Image (cartoon, rainbow, N blue to C red):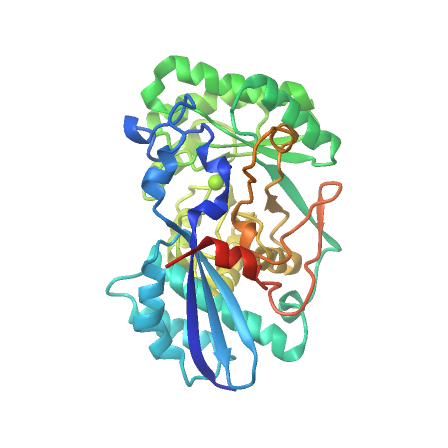
Length: 401
Ligand SMILES: [Mg+2]
């Protein structure tokens, strides 16, 4: 089998829906222009995220099989990297030779790659190659990975934006009633909001913990919006709420800072969604930065690289809970003994019930069959390959020229 050509479609961040307009602390919150902590600057994130959110890469073969892979949060530069560099390396090659092709793509992009958009481009191509491998033998990719090690996939409800405390309480309770035994909230404030913001952050955790009781795992995401001093104070303050983890307390490059925050309290620290390749994740693991590793298969180098990262994490007894719960992630989690659960983005009832024409969709808008949780679990993904068939209508609607 030979690769004949590669097509690229850029997908607008509009497909991520309205949730990006809700208040939360982000890596950009220190700048007023990009801070929406109080909910009065809803376009704050769109101002810096840029128009392109995901990039769909379709690898076509002379066997009539097309593999689909998605690169996440990459800007349109993925298109340039795929068209000008990666496609030249893989066209006329055998798509089943993933190890060699991965190394070829990685080495060829070192001068401008190693992290960020180039590795996201490699991720999309690598996922497409895995999709081809599954489609060729008519099996789901989790079967190619050694078969499922679980009957269904546990997941955590990831939403709980700090819109207001009443909604937050209702939302948390609703997830508990729907069978989720784990959930993740978003913090609202960072160092720029001082002690008052700290108190508010604590109140968000208290609201959710009080709503769901002690038997539900509650995690919190700081989305890189804190610094080491602030994070150390915040985690000490949150110790009594028995949190499952606190995610991305500092920026990804501050690995020593991660370790320092982790040392400061008994609250588990997680991160890795903005880290790349086995070498990046090796640093997080070996320097004691995280209790839980959260690579994203659409960013970290694809499934080929995620398997290496998972093997390394398991050797250090660090579980892998991948960022975002897209279909390719579900194949990985299904077949890994080191990956206990998926992230899952439910739609809050208060949001679904509001009177508006707007529909939130998240990135799953581009998949034809996005994951659907029932009683807090997701069934093993359907279909052959990576279950990565796209919703053509949505893709057309959200395409950026
Ligand atoms: Mg996160």
